[in-house]
Image 1 (cartoon, one colour):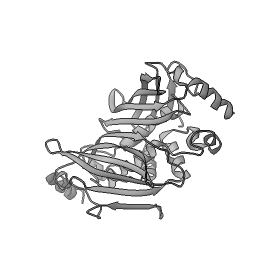
Image 2 (tube, chains in turn brown, red):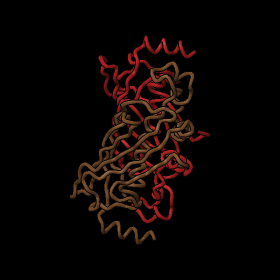
Image 3 (cartoon, one colour):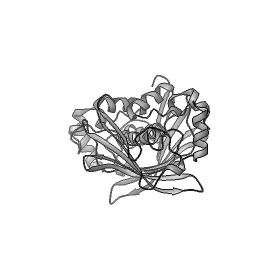
Image 4 (cartoon, chains in turn brown, cyan):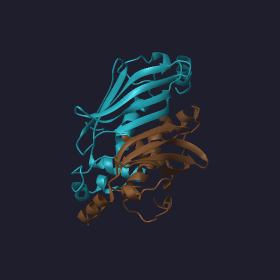
Length: 163
Length: 163
């Protein structure tokens, strides 16, 4: 993180687990990360994708991107970190995610990942989020996510069990 | 990789870049990786998701998963590595991906990521793949991907430029 990371949860700034009943339509969370060459190399190693457009500046210079670009799934992974750490936080279960890759992310770009609650299905405890990664004003990845979020009684019981 | 990785491209075993015209309906590629605790920790660091269900065995023991689980996006990232390295390989542009997370992936699980060409849109050079990650016979992540794949003339020119 080291000065490159800013996390913020709109409405409630304290990291915690949100229960289904506590999530409101329009509620958002966001975080920012500056993408480094080391990030791209670490992602390439762990996901086994050493495509030269990510790894090799000379190769990338001859492509439409002109320089090395980050893996699309790196932005998606940073987006998913919002769910895991901030909103809803630990305990929520990732059910689905759609991703549309709109523009490249390059070394030094400051990526802003943002999610917003857009619908709730009370019978199923499912919450749908609009998800978006931007670099400046440009949307680089957009989509929707569905998470299964425990009810308040369950979250309270789990918190007690994990203390 | 070190003995934990097997990559295979059905129909043509040599790593290269496939042009749009060379991709056939039903063509597949797959690879296998055993998911380690180190993989989960590296992914957590690069994507900034230290949710305790991934990181903390004692916490995870009290969840429905009973033990630490990999980030869903780690499987998705390994899936996307197939596109970047094997089929279509370097030069293809990731346009979209849908993901449905069906079951957890745990430490020691051997993940098989597989893609299959299911449709081609010649006017737009878009190729749609069915994507699937399995552990044994269980599907853990499924979805569809759309990639923009250059035509043969363009791939040949790029190969020459990058030699």
